[in-house]
Length: 468
Image (cartoon, rainbow, N blue to C red):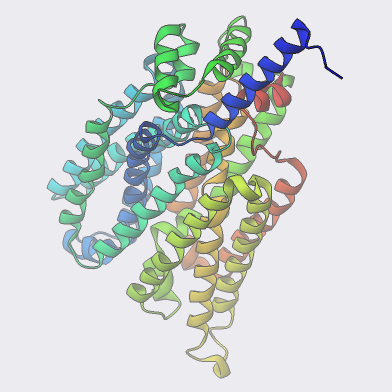
């Protein structure tokens, strides 16, 4: 019996086929997409090398310029003060001049900062250089994950955005390793390399299609999206979805900081701010900035300990990238936060047991295990996923203001921990790490109760379901 195909059925089937064709093409990685992501995450490597710089050079730099503990703590933490200011301005800059130009703007400060550190002969110029690098890093910490989220297909967005954290990890790790063999001035010069790589690459890569749509540059929007998806890809469905959402949002006024506290944005704000605050107050930058002194205080070789951290960090961050769009955000966050709790507890316990004669000399291994468990667990999820979720949950009309606020909160927490860490360790190493463990335990509860799963959903779908 022959089935008649009516015009409406044919149109419906055609529409469905078009959507399926677009969906399949959206998951294809193109050379342009891969290269564009590489250029963007070169900025993440800059971020990592700046964080990692203060740990391996601590002894050399302190002796060379005769710095006190307070002066070195200022040098280590002033990076985060610059980052706070950069983060506060980053959203508005990125909305005004575009994501690509913002990355170039930030790199100019990073280059100037590294050169200032290299040439410094007194503490004040060290601090100036560190502050400038921090400012550029603060801008990068917002714009890189946002740019990657806006250019990536929905089924690859989590993995691609998490490459931001992988490159931070690589930057930290490479700096740790090189810092064991070269002086602090040479290490500052090496910090220029990824800055220059990104600056050159920015002349080649396309602008974010979603930003181009936001500012009404529709022809450039379609051209950029086609480049990213491939010349043969059918972008009609994705193009239509982005246009419809952008036009609907454009009817709203541009969101300010005050507008963020409206009821429709409450959940997005709680999730974004909460994850960033918990990430920082769990102690990550205390451990990253001063890893060598932690191992020394625990009675373990700082060089061996830092090499062990590198061996753990890179594969665990890579595993997180692989699992991001397979297992989802929430499961990785829960496992990661639980692991950081265990790691901090072990380190705290190792310091508590230092006076026990039967364990004399053995507690240093417990500290090593704790730091490695913490580092591996953090690299698996808590390092990268908060940045992924931050780039996903805010609508385009408030993304600049909200992203700046969330990133500032992150850097405020980072500054508090990085500046206070040496003083806390002098007060009580065990209580310091027990405090970090408490925050990590609270993170598990926060994720379980409040953080949504965003795997496999378009940005427009996520933002509509949460806030509008």
